[in-house]
Length: 391
Image (cartoon, rainbow, N blue to C red; front, top):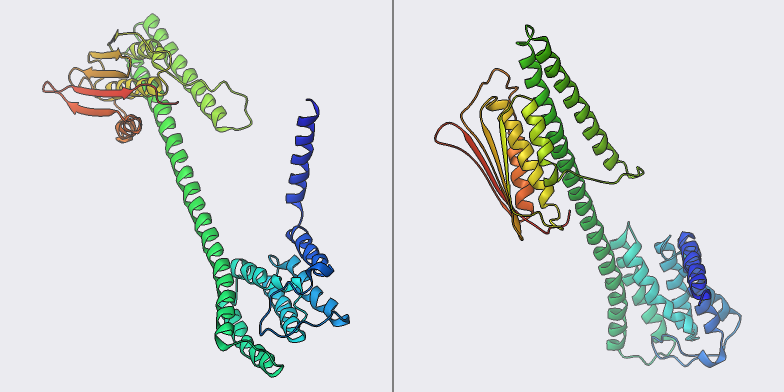
């Protein structure tokens, strides 16, 4: 039982070593195998025949023909034009001398490889080979070939089909490479968007809280105790921002051993408390029980509340804010309302990216998001986030 994994491991290492070899080394065995098979007496006369000339016995030239038809297959991917020219020369000699060796079957293989791997001069190669086919047919007729004209046409079409297969493989490979390039670009763009969104959520929230707290501290010089508490809150917020940024950088580093923990709905109490310390009166109401496997719904819920509280700090500082979260078996509903515009003295302004990012987050999970002004001048953010999506 213990030998099977060891044997599989040896096979895997051997396969990896083989794949690291040069392409010429990997293509050589097939040509050698075809050459050896062509020398077997049982396979004499089993090759491709054009013109139906009577087969003749092997002589010294037959070995050169076999070498020309098989050995260049080793470079059929490295130098496809060279391989095709040499194999075509050997094939022509094979048909004129009527050896009909098994190695003559290398002609369509060389054509497929050239059609798939030849980078330059493709049209010239097709025209040259087509032009060379006519003298070969004439030479075979003068040697007494019994092939009818339609036979030559059919064989030419068969060779053209081999080239077409190679060209199709080339176009398929190019299309796959282009598809992978687009996927890689889209993945990089999505990752940049995700990173920008995370940076916005973390930096904007903490910096906004620090600006508001620092602005409020300016008016507390006559109350040392309150001033000290306000400055301590600024310090704590800054440290929290540094911790969150370090955590994010750790996640971006593939070699860092991190637990990968992200904020969730369970962290809302700490978030609300920090916002209160920044001077925003916030009430938190929760209904229902949190699901054990809510997936990324809890993370998105946290971000919705965080961005809403950030906007409240910036645009309605000092106004009453209510956060209502309802946990259901299939979704989490959240509503954050702010009464009135509040004081704008401490507002650092905004770019509008936060709400747009929230909408993208929620809709990516199949949920609904809205952000509207209320009749009394306040603002209401609502989101319905389906639970169970993978984080």
